[in-house]
Length: 317
Length: 256
Image (cartoon, rainbow over all chains, first blue to last red; front, top):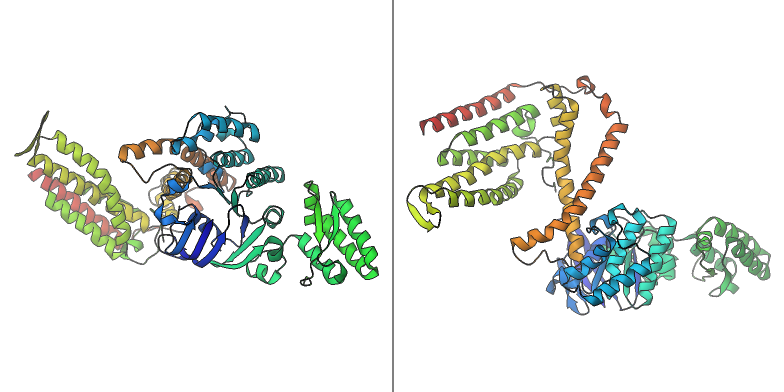
């Protein structure tokens, strides 16, 4: 359990970055932090693993204040993936890199070797490769693997998909999803709202050092007023669902389309709209076009089963 | 807040001096520090350095710098203390003794190094690196590529320091205990960090070189800059004052 209680933080006691932040993350949650640069997301993450201590308030990890623990002690519970993998990688082979964390914690035994072998297998690494000669995506994956191999109960990711192409992003996030499925708490800072929508279950939006929204991802993403304050744009799939709900209240709260490709998506939405009547048919056409060019299309290309759930909350401006 | 060796804007006398005059005067000041063994004279020079820092509102930066130089000079002082058996014996050693002469020499070394460093570093805090480069090219006729290489080296110091801080944080987050143990343990832990720092610095240097190249770096000549850097009366006065310090220092040294 991670708890922030009215936390205020700054760098070297100069400019205040966090201005009274409170939230709690339960074990096993997958939480995304969103917001503009300078909103305080990364600062909040650095408070979680003790790299930064609060000026006021408390950050508790499993009920223990981070001020009572050294960062190296927190490393056993909290794994931290930095945005830039090159700051993390320091060994001459992939295998050495994966063992480095165990050595730092004084736990490089036979069990550690076995776990390293398992991770090499899972991630598909060549153990003797030079990490610095890998491409950017592979280095990010190695940095993630070197954190995951320690099996921390909390995994903190600071913009894990920055600088990655689509395929690399999918691979990194797929592995993160697997780690979460095995019971780890995942806390992620992410600017890509598609990734947030695809993977996170809860979203905390920050602006100017404060939490401005906190709730299930879909609830947060459909609130344009809050997202506007944080200069965020929701994925198009959210807008599609809002348009459908506004035009066809009968569909509110029910899945209206389920598809694996863009074409299936367009057909499914159009068919459902046809059943709903002529008015909604126009909406479905618009939705289909939007889906083909936007988020739903992206989701479909990823091979995910994209679905549109009509929302009854409000119409898209 | 400025970082190490980063320009701090201001309108002090030091800020207004010609960049070349500042550099020349600081170099002369350093020479004066090394020409004399008089602890009293060096203490005066040290005080002058702090006064100069106060005049341009950089006492905080100067104290930080003095602490860093002090740490380095203390190592030299200890070596000197252990290897210069002079004066009255204070403590015996298997190979000699620690004496009052050695103690005085060690103290002189510390004061000398701190006093010599302060004006040199203040030059960087009170001068835009572009001005320093351009003035070196225009006034001293240094080829642009060498002037650029010198100022780029200085410019990269805070960048690399920031990189090192980030790398240390990343390793701390993996469980490396930089916050415990003695100097030897910390030094041993720092060794693996040199690899990512080296890789990052080579990548950055390469990127900077390419960026400079594509913006016509090799086409630049003495006449490329429009801004002139003529020496004013105050610049000549500053250089003359520092030259006088060298003369006094040499005279004191000769007098024993």
